[in-house]
Length: 231
Image 1: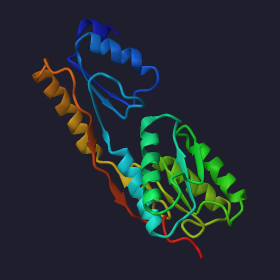
Image 2: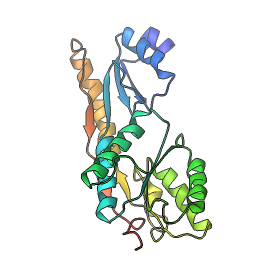
Image 3: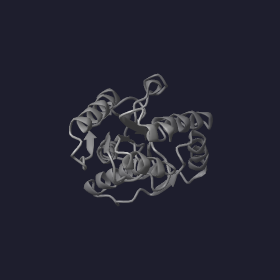
Image 4: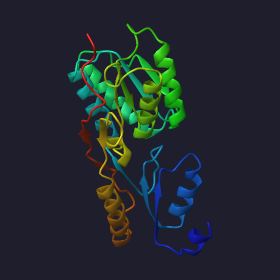
């Protein structure tokens, strides 16, 4: 608050602002300071939103899995209502619809971005009827996917033999596991640079009050955790 009141800085970059960020955003805006929002959980009416194209991310993961022949899907998201997670789910639904399948994954759960909850889902999946269990699981981030992978192996199942999984983010460790994780890569370097450029542009154009959201393209990275379903 002191930095805002004294205007010790010209602008802020807020990454993954949570439920409590609304008050901070309003204070920054009221003080006339510049603002960039990265990974927002709601459409704030201030500053400029910069993010990956999360809907396209979910769509690319879904298209890949549908193309491999999967028909029974699960989506494991973060917090319910969180924009990143909901946009990724919307993209998956679009891919399923394009593939002639139901727009809704057969299993849809929200784990609050907690890897342990993904491990709990692995135990739930293992207890299910193999004729009805999802053969493909799309996770809203890599950490949850890797937690699921570890637990599935401990339970005696194989990835991708028994179930294919995809993550999102392409963190460093996703290429080091066995099997390596198929995931969606975000261009974080370009996004970070865009955040700085946005602050500079806002300072150069103080009369402009509204700044359109900027979405960066994502890339499907195919590794070993996906294959055609058995049978």
